[in-house]
Length: 176
Image 1: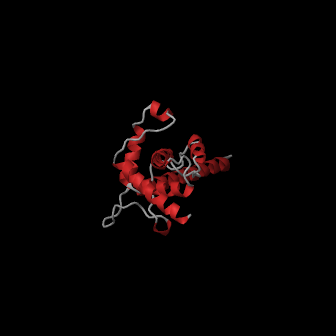
Image 2 (image 1 turned 45 degrees about the horizontal axis):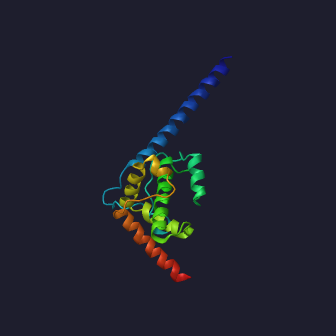
Image 3 (image 1 turned 90 degrees about the vertical axis):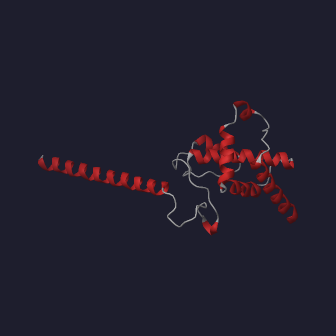
């Protein structure tokens, strides 16, 4: 009976130590994500594979919802489970925004996937554009969200996205 109690006590102690180590490791990882770049580093977006700029992480990784995953798939984008719900929502809002600009500028309702991917990268790696679209999406009314066609404000963000679309369209029509 005494050996059973000792085994339970040792098991409980090991479990508590393991749990504490997991929490400590998770806390350390969160602190590393929150820290700005080390002194002497520039404030440019982090570099991804092959020197590509990437979007800074938002929210808690792994919190993307099933509805967001379905909406992304409906827009021809393959979601990743490690995205946060904030990242997924920003991507959805960005796609809605640039598709509206594409329709306004070209009349194309179903742009090529390559153009969409390049526009998504262009917008999400630019802090100013990303913040502007985030603000636009947060300020949309219910009527605007339910409208069949989106009417966008003709501001600097719209102009920059429209210019990028014009360049991509010219490059795309020159190849054909």
